[in-house]
Image (tube, rainbow, N blue to C red; front, side):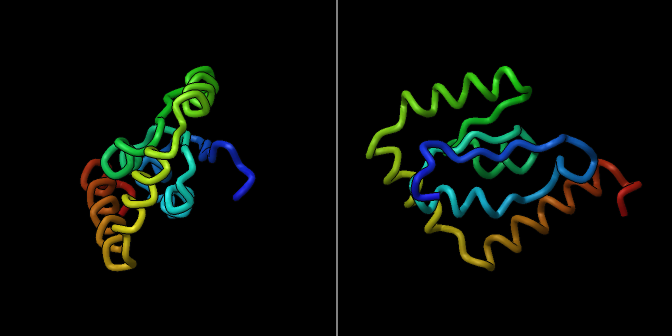
Length: 110
């Protein structure tokens, strides 16, 4: 990852992925890397201030370009600082919240 200019997290959006917690995003941010990811509930709720979130493939490509053009040392520091706030307790708590939200909105997943 040290040689990545931008880290990405593309994924299909479905009943399972809509509420997942992609732990790799924390790892990317801990390295100070700009991140472009598929917009999901968790990405919006937890990471929206520190990542670029796309709804479709053309927007994904546009946001990669934007992430490259906006990247700077101040943003690197902000991303690293944000990632430092994640402990395993916090990750598990956020994961539980995400699961509750997903199953509350879609009881057939229980």
